[in-house]
Structure formats: structure tokens, C-alpha cells
Length: 213
Image 1 (cartoon, rainbow, N blue to C red):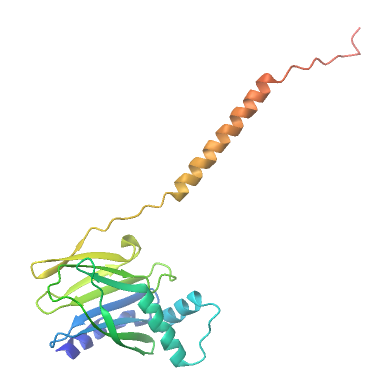
Image 2 (image 1 turned 45 degrees about the vertical axis):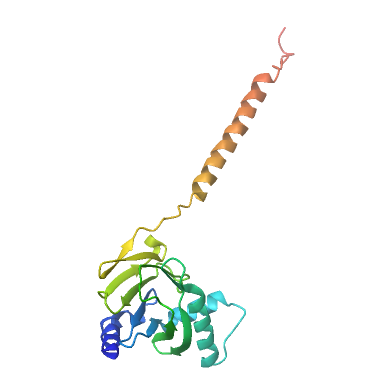
């Protein structure tokens, strides 16, 4: 059953294989209760991220590249279950290709799942990137979500009945531009005030015209 699900999943999303700004994340529970986490994206997208994030560290072999990809994914993909539980990665492998896949065997995901927070910044250096998250757990309906700029690549999910649903995520607003404009206007006002004060206090100069009789 697990292999059928995986096959159908990648067939249905094969159109995205060559799109650098699109990726997929699949977390699925096998029939025996073990878990597999798979991340799929364009090879060019992984190469761009590795080169951008490690400008001084070049890979010389495919194995070195795979190791850097695994480390990058570990650092930029996180799941937090029931407020404070993280999974443990027991094995990792990378399947290189036009569509490159990173496969983790994981454990520690609670059976009594209540909620989880997912953050995916694997392809953060790619403009308007987005990832599709699919979560398959025994006893829950299969669910699909999207992480993008609008939700800051973070999902707050909770279990309601037999369904995993998205809950609101607090959005951090960036007021830096507003502060910069406000500061500039204030500074211009101060400069204008002192300039006007200077002009008012400046004594009038009498110009003598020596040509007048």
C-alpha cells in the first residue's frame, strides 16, 4: 500500500519536476507504523541553494553534493508535534535526477497526534518558491497543504476528528519601511523648522546705493 501511495504521489506531481520554484514534501506512515519523509524538487533548485548557502564550499563528487543536500534539508525543514515533540532521523539518502528526492526514515512521531507546526525554508533563495505538503497518517484523512510566501512557509495544523486542518499562523509584519519613511519625514521637518527659525532671526541688511543723489 505504501509503495502504491508513493508511486501515485510522484506520478501526479511529475509536472513539477522541472520547476525550480515548486517542491513537494511527503510525510507518510507505513502500515507497520514506521514513517518516511520524502522531499522532491528540481535538481537545479537544490544546486542553486547549495551554491548560494555555501559560496566558499564546493562539492567535487556526487557524494559530497548529496551530503550537503542532506545537511541543508535537515537545517531548513522542521516538524514540531504536540507542541514540543520532534522526530528523529534514522537514515537518509538522496536520489539524484532532474527531479531529486531526499528520503528520510524517521521515528518519534506521536500516535496520539493533536497538532503540528511545519516550517519549510529549503528553497528560500528561490523567488516565489512554494512547496506542497502531503501528510498521510493511519486513521486520518489524506491531506494536502501549500507553504508559500503568504504563510511565510509555515503551517500550524491541528487534528479535528479524522482530519488535519490548518489553523491561523501569527504573521509578523515588517514595519521597517514605514519606520524609515517616518524617520525621513521627521528629519526633514526638523531641518525645515530650524531653517525657518534662522531666516526669521537673521537681521535685515541695508544695501546702500551710492548712485542715488
